[in-house]
Structure formats: C-alpha cells, structure tokens
Image (cartoon, rainbow, N blue to C red; front, side):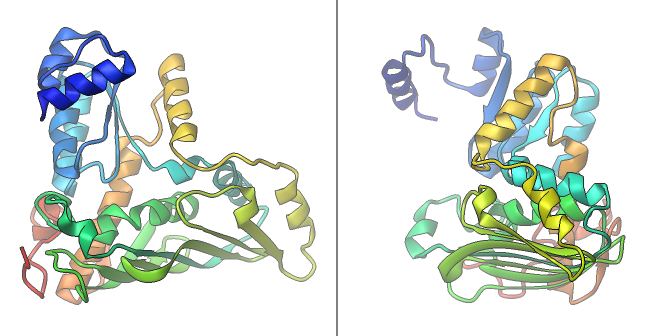
Length: 326
C-alpha cells in the first residue's frame, strides 16, 4: 500500500527487491510460498492471486470473511498446483498434538463435557484502527478474530459438531460487530460444550477443558502454551492416564514456529499442508452457525448454512440486532 515503507523495510532487512502490488510480486519472482498477513478482507483476493500463479499460500486467520469465500478458495485450489493452508497455530503445540493422539487411541475414554473460554480485553483505542470492528473489513468480532484460536483447537480435538445454540451482544465497544458471544454446542459423539468469546474481560485468559471418561484435561494460558500450562486429573482408578500423558515432555511454546515448520515439511514431501481448506471450512462453518443462531434465535445444525442462507455470503447475515455503529 505504501511504496516508501516497503522500500525502507527492504533496505533495513537486506531484501533485494520490493514490489508495488502482490500481483507484481507474483509476476516478477519465483516464490516458494506466500504468507498472507494483511487485514482480513484482503486474505482471499491475495490467496486467489497466488493460486492463479500456482503458488502455495499460508493465510492468517480468519482466512476469509464468509463461507462463500472459503468455497471460492476451494474451487480455485482445484484448478491450481498451489495449496492453501490456514494459520491455526495452537493445533501444533506438542501438548495439543499429544491430546489428539491419546484421545483417538482411546486412552481417555469417552468424551462427555468441554468448555472453551477466550476472555480477552481490547479497549476503545484498539478499534481506532479503521479495519477493526467492521463486518466488511474484519468479518466479525471476537468470534471471528480472537476466540477462533481456541475453538479451532476444541474442534480439532472433539471432531464434527452437530448443532449450536448461541447469543452475541455488543455491550461496550463502538463497533459494528459483537464484543461478546456465547454458544452451547453438541458434537456428533454426544459431547456437550460451552464456548465464550469476549473482548471485555480485564483478567485475560484462554482456557480449554475436556472432561473425558477417565480424566479431565485442561489448559490455561493467554497467547501460547507449553506443557506447564496443562493439567491432567485422573478419574478414580485411572491414575495410569497421567503416566501416559507424562511419557512425553516438551517446553516448546505453541505458536507460528510449530505450524510453519509443519507447513514447510509438507511442501518438502509433497503432502497436503496443514490446516487444509477442508479443515478450515469446518471451523468457518462453526462461526457462521454461531452468528446465525445468535441473530435468528434458533438452533443451527451442521450443514444447514448453504448458498440460500444469508449467513453464507456474510457472517452478519440478516444483520446484527443492534444495528451498526460505524
């Protein structure tokens, strides 16, 4: 957007060339991949340019502003040798990888109850940045841009979700979008879970809890976790579960480094990079269903939001009940 800033950045970091647009970059350079870190509304247009040039692309969250945009990426990917992956970095911390593996192996037994809280604080000044707090530029509030980290990890552990009952409100910030949302979710395996996303919580925390048949597994952190942030509490008679959990120890912090390494490994061996668009679509459909439930006051089931739904083309759907501040 600013050629002078681009040139100054290139000079500071020893980058030999800077380009005025992403299209010019793709035309002039032979690229291994593109990492898209722009404001959300630019994610899909740049990703589509990359796919048209047969270049792999890693897109920051939220990868798109709507389900229709995700489907446009899926369609474009089919005609390209490039692949799109979404940054959901908390999937890649060693503890989360271990949790998914042990759960799939049946070590914890059946899943019963879960909760996922993203209780963060963003003051008025945070929203002075023009693209924040609008449906057109950001696609949603904490449900789209903040809590997405935690509930994507929840979904990666618990598998397919079945239905959502939700509320979303704008309580304090002068924005178009919500600043708080809550959902009750039923999963295909019968697990029931609560999901809370807030930008109004002075004591910030990110918490996940899974109550399995043989143990409770919990993590509390803020923007990244290590093994030290996780606890495993066995059910009576199942103390061996803790021993299994402790067989592997890691001090690695969950974050971009872990995911970028996995992304590059996939490119090296020719496999599909994680997190694929199919994985991404499940999380984005969850978001669309949450907004649809909150704004219509109805239960929304998986697969219900198709091209004929107003929530397919925009997370705002029929419009937020409070109207728009901007």
